[in-house]
Image (cartoon, rainbow, N blue to C red; front, side, top):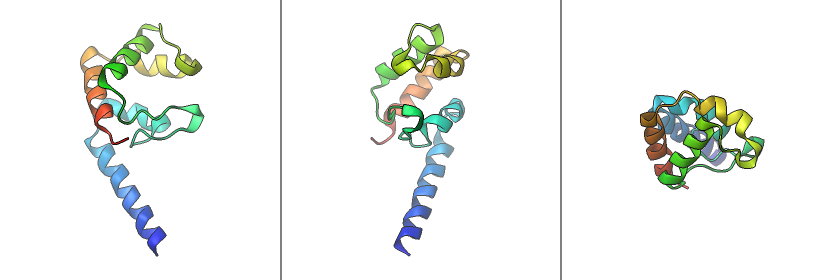
Length: 99
């Protein structure tokens, strides 16, 4: 019974986080998870990263000048159409996620 309660609670937290996320974060959820902690595909946890790092990385992927962990082929298309405003919004949101 405790496991079921924990699963339901975790699902509710994930939904709440996704509901508060900027619209542009929906692209991120598949690989990074609603909480920014999903590590499938060899992803790093992005939750709680420094805002400046997130901004720098997203701008690097957008400009095709960054290839962290060989992820450019996945990240470049996702960052390609982000505006500076969306990058700032994403960085604020992701840096505020609990580690």
